[in-house]
Amino acid sequence: MMDELWKSRNDAHEFLQERALSVVRAFEDCFVLVDECAIQLLAADSHFSLVTSLIVVKGRNLTHGLFSLCLDSLAQEGGALFRPLLEVVELLEYLIQDPYRVESIVDSKPKAGEIARSIGSEFKRIRDHLNQEASHASLGVHALRHCVSRNSAESPELQLQQVFMPAVLLVNLTTLFSVMCFLAEEAVSCLAIATGQDQSVLSNRAGDIFNAGMAALDEAQSEVGL
Image (tube, rainbow, N blue to C red):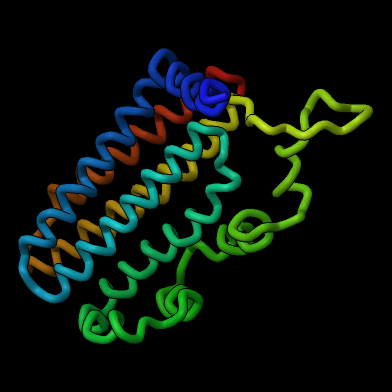
């Protein structure tokens, strides 16, 4: 039983190590950058830097959880984590646009929708999709089709254990990587505010990580026929 639980993860890990190692390295580089920003924010020793460092770590943990669920072929269920990850990115942007907002958000944070509207969030389409199909216990076709065996054309059978598919993994990782890079960029911007210092080196590093990661994902997708 335990072997079955981890089969998709093991298959995904083998695939990434053998055929998409550059994708793994891009994620690792992005995690390192996010971690560095969180640590430096905490060291800046202000209310703004403390609050944003904690928010960045929350985003990092959500990203870690989503990456893990992708390996387990459970990205659809991961929608329950993806929505709060978007909210973390939007909250950081909300504070970046007006750092004085940090004085009130701990006790009376606006609703996520209000924050998204106030910053002109780019994530509305993704959030609408999550609301419909992923972040709740939806009974829609897209939310449940992976729960039925693809080999059951005549008589439906439950798909109790999800099957690893390289193309699906890469599509999901592409979406996750894009949002994680948003998180990294917001963390860098917070650090610039907290320290009052130019952070162009880290900003350029974030851009390089994004470009390298997307190129690696595009190449990997091409190799599997996407």
